[in-house]
Image (cartoon, rainbow, N blue to C red; front, side, top):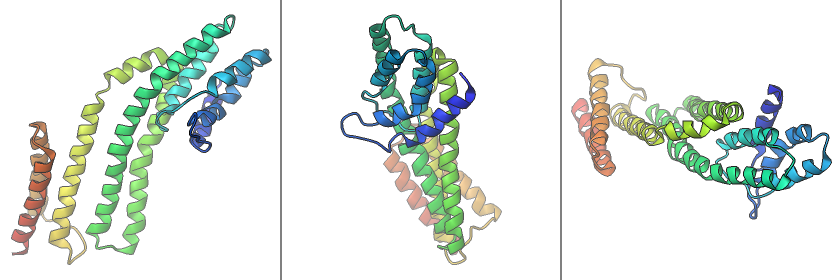
Amino acid sequence: MQLIELFWAAIKLNFLQTSWNFERLQNIGFLFSIIHILKRIYKNSKDNFLFAIKRHIGFFNTHIFFSSAALGVMIKLEEEINDQDVKIKEKEIENIKTGIMGPLAAIGDSLFWSGIKPLALLIGVGLIWLYNYNIKIFFIAAFISILIYNIPRVLIKYYLLFKAYFQYKELFLLIQRIRFQDIMKSIKLLGMGILGIVMAGYLNFKQTGIVSNRFLESFLLLLFFVFIVRALNRKVDVSTVFISIVTGSIIFSYIIIR
């Protein structure tokens, strides 16, 4: 296996959902990503090549950014499992594919749709809000949000692809060891802290359109963040924490204005 083949498969994986359908969902996009590798693996056996196509034209659905893990595992299995008994090979590959699609989808949905994406948008919107809707900030905020969203996407995509191909047996242990709940909790904590800072900054400095760098305000905002972290660590209800942030931000802004 040449690395260029893996890179090319990963690039084609960007089109995973371009042929999405209601019957088998992402199957055509997945087959498109892997077919050039299947041609190499089965270049001496047209029948086995057709069997491989049949395997991967079946149902496939997982998170688009974590699909590279499934791709890497499938490539490795197609290369390693003996071709003498096609039915056994097909059953083993199908069982593993079915077994990993669900967990990858659940992790990806939680991490990106409920974590990184809202955080990136919050930071972008916060910058626009703090700078009083300055037109130049729109472009800067959009650029920053895109970076925050896409850097983890690219890193995770290629890391999982190579990890799945070269060490696919360790991939499942890695997924089990990673404490995704703690990661999600940290993202939510960071988001809550940013929200508190943005609200306090906007209410206090909306006339100037820029956040003050004075020591007192920076120190008080840091206290807000520490309060959020400690409250959530003690399992205080998120709604209670949010209301406290809003109330504290208003009081803080009123004191400074006075």
